Image (cartoon, rainbow, N blue to C red; front, side, top):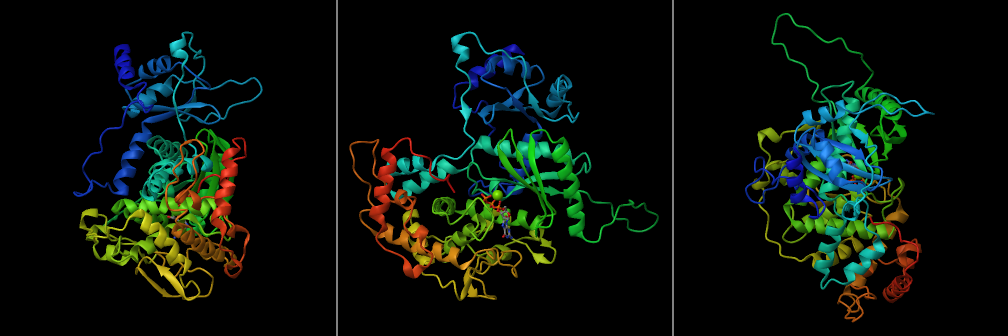
Amino acid sequence: SLQKVETFLQRSIGTDVVAAQPEAPTRDESDEKGGCKSLHALQVERQEQAARSVLINCQSRTREKTLLKYLSSHGDIKNYFFYESDDLYAVVEFAKRENVASLLEGAIIPSGSHESAVPFKSRLLTLRNLHTAKSPNQQSGQQCQVQTAFPITELIKNLSREDSIDQQITSLTETYQLTEENTRLRFLVCSLLNDITAAYFPECTIKPFGSSVNGFGKLGCDLDMFLDLDGISGWNPKSGLFLEYQMKQASSARAVTQNILYVIGECVDQFGPGCTRVLKILNARIPLVRFSHKPSGFQCDLTANNRVAMKSTELLYLYGELDPRVRGLVFTVRCWARTQGITSGMPGAWITNFSLTVMVLFFLQKRSPPIIPTLDHLRDLAGPADKCVIEGNDCTFVSDFSKIQLQSNTETLEQLLREFFEFYGTFQFSKMSLSIRKGQEMNKPEMGPLHIENPFETSLNVSKNVNTSQLDRFVALCQESSWLLQQSETNKPKVNEDSYNVLPWGLATLLLPSQVATINTRKKKRREPASARIKSLLESLKNKNEPKMSEGL
Ligand code: GTP
Ligand code: MG
């Protein structure tokens, strides 16, 4: 076994931190053209991987070799990595579930002198007594995977070193997107929570949805989880004698969801290791339990019976996989919106990331020729197995990516970004609503500043919360950014010998604080902010100790 560890370490340590690389993706359920895996297939694979994984608090810099030797006495380690949050943690994936069981058999219940432990055993562990290394070589410690977003000021500097706006967009996307490790951690946290819920509902699963899996997630985004109870189904008797479960009844499906989330919320609060600040928000349109998972640093939202959200996640994922420009533009627009205060981490009258993503998709459908198809077209391509109706809403769309024929639009990301701002800077929001189902603007069915049709519940407006002043700010900032991108001073790399004090240009200038931010209406907008913004950034770059600007999107 020691031999195995040695070989394993030789293979992996020192290589870009991800210790054992995940296996090459299998081709089943992939399409022939791009090898795109359906979200469902991806989820199943990730869930299985997470079920074989443990999360270990290693307390501080630790002897990696000793740790791995200890762990691998319980079975082969397929993959591991370290990261830092409040402490040093390791995510360790074993080859088999039995290995985890074996590891847990040897684990002990903590005995504090002042406190008593709730004896709920989980796969969140603390490694004790692993003394720090003595030899200097071993003391070098672990390389840690970053799990938080990159500071915006650093991003602006890095973008300014790129040679084209296209490269800036690609670079921004690569900087912000979720890493392999962060995705593993997200599935692991779902899996840990699944152990709590499975105590009541052994057949249930906890699935991540939203930006954790739709391809548009940024490091540091929340973890949306969905308690899937649909696996709990009975056997349908044809005729004759049969047994039926006696079950408690509640007045409505919503009441059942609320009751379940109430109890799970209480369990997470009382028993869930690492889960803090638990809030039960049961009267929301979509009832949820919100909590912080301290070891991962994730802000978690747990919902139940929320299948439509899972479908919209699948749809966003599909659009993101169809053409790389989709993700590039969504990441850029989300980042721009967050730095300009169009979106916010708080609930309120702001445009949400979800609405903003739908706006980008709509814009891409409106290109000539369109870059992505309409949702109605995706529904027409669906096969019998894709049929899906949730609470009377048709959520059917094609799952086989290879059936989708794309038109040959050759616009560059730079052109698209420019056109995006132009498009929404002049859009008739007062009369028209946006529909990605039709790929056309429609007459607004109701008043309200911004109307974006919910793709699967078409009578609903996903941006109902947005007020006039927020919409006006969005439009004004689109106009300003469109104008900025047309200025020759903005859209060419600034040649500068001094690579430290690089001048912001292109996309970087759009991420500088705007003059429009303080102006409420379009009419009052001033139109000479570019030089002011560049000047203010230069000031901030000069002063290395200045406080950080707001964090990413
Ligand atoms: P982040 O801001 O990065 O968390 O983006 P997100 O896409 O995860 O958004 P959020 O956490 O607000 O919501 C999670 C998921 O719920 C979204 O991806 C959608 O699938 C769905 N969702 C959110 N808001 C709405 C809405 O207003 N209408 C509908 N139909 N679905 C929504
Ligand atoms: Mg989210």
